[in-house]
Length: 198
View 1 (cartoon, helix red, strand yellow):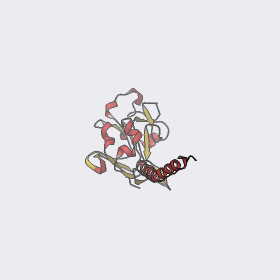
View 2 (spheres, rainbow, N blue to C red):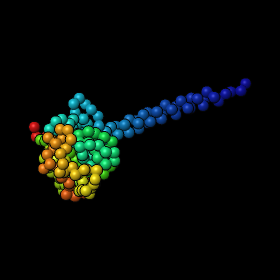
View 3 (cartoon, rainbow, N blue to C red):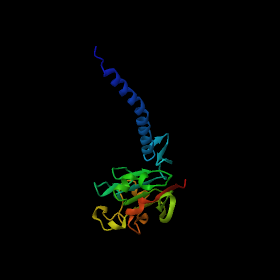
View 4 (spheres, one colour):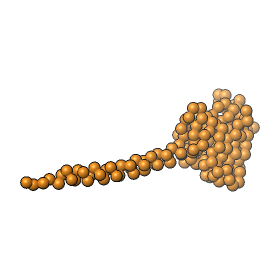
């Protein structure tokens, strides 16, 4: 009579799977936990960004950060429409953002060129992560700030001196529109705070 090795092989394979499966599941769980710390999740009326709870944007308590220039109309690869999220921007409410590049990944990846800040909203941008280093910008809204690197760009259509479309003119009068004092491309490597003064 010939004995088959097939049952022994199946038993060995089952044992190997039995031992490996918990390690695989643990690895997957750890990966998901770390990825979850860097993404936005809505929890009630608040949002978790980079592991920190922040507020959703509301009138008089909001900021819009873009890798494009801020304008009163959208133009693909050139301008973000103020307070409307697109593939280049993030629109946020009050909160502390210890790592801006994780909180604002679209704006960071596309060079961080425009900021719109509503009334009663203050923005502080720090050069380094975790609110350390020089303060690059400390401003109370309302304000539209576009990167000085693009001053004279025709897509802006002289935004600092003309009447804005829709209700934006009432929020952002001409005296609160300006260009940055330095190139904004590295600003998202640090951290920032959005503070609301109700």
